[in-house]
Image (cartoon, rainbow, N blue to C red; front, side, top):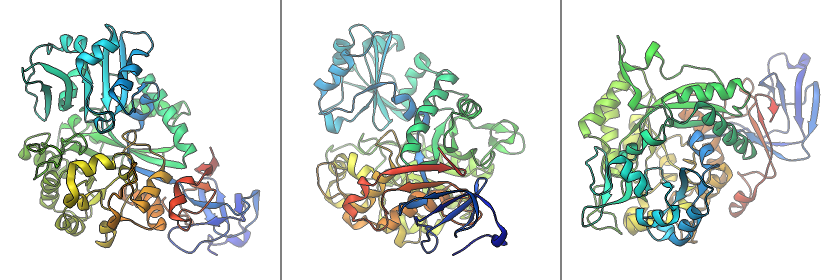
Length: 525
């Protein structure tokens, strides 16, 4: 068993013993010793406190490499419209508490039979303003009172990188896609900082119950993804108030970058990727190249199988997107670009190749529909794809319908990435789908949709592969593998105690594993 130099005289704060400790980077052991917030030995050493885990499994704490923490926390206080019919959606809106606004989230037109309409929301809202957010985050539906306030009651407007959807007579239906959602922002944003800090608190408490010890927040401060121009302050405030329960790396929306003397583009004071500490840090700049696969706004080379004539679209002019990526790279940022469709992926890979630095660990968020040549090219360029295993279950049926049988083999790859030598991170994109990492691991291994149809079985991975993705892989994607992601002497004592081992349990039972305790920085939370 491994331990720190001089461990014979070591006195630890805490010893976890009689456990099945899955180190991820080496052989399993039976004990972990902790001093302060660090692992100091993988052996039985003297300790001030000893906890016998009675054979339970200990793994590194889970790291969600792509989630929306504040957004998720806000949804916990919004009307839940993850329902299976439009009638049920309208009923949920009608039952909402009184107020000027009704804000709902989570609908999927593939599950409820179509998008809600302004007229249906008018009837359900009974004069109140209604905003209903799609589960993907890439579109929303508003009712007539909102459209009137926006000056869109009878006629649509052109929006770069988005669409105000209208019927055959030119009357807006209420559906706003991609950047068109920002038209609503002046009516609802910014959220008060204290409201966002409360959302972060609620989300973090849930994360601890699921074994999450750190995460990457995939976009703050601007664009359609941001909730406030001072969103970083909400995370600072949550931390000061003892409400930041997990470690957070923050992606900054590219919309807020601006010219900075000598640096090109960036943030004031020269703040960029890497600023911060183990609890709260600035990560990559977030760029949106395209939209949603199930929402049919991802930029594809071929029509969606279930919507002839539709191929999605880029969220900006190709030259402008490329310039944004290259400018951020030159200013010292890591770049994380949302690209789902194969056309968008090609654009981003071209930009990263032009940047010319495979050591920077630029990322492609989702990498949703990737041809074999794009997988090889990502590996050659040192690019990190960030797919979401849980998508296979919760929105897999919609993705299969959108892609058809041939292109479905390219969807949300896992095994192909590993075989190409890529370190694969684990992530959820919560609240797009349920974010519990054990559910994500289950779906990475089992590759089955909610209806029981095989999703992409050739891309299935092992239980150990899936566990490694949500620990070491996600730490690697953040450039933090030297301090977390494995149970190794000297690394942070971020651990989770489980009722079974995801690496060896029968594959169909991974989702049933219980999180017994979660430790962050040597403290059970």
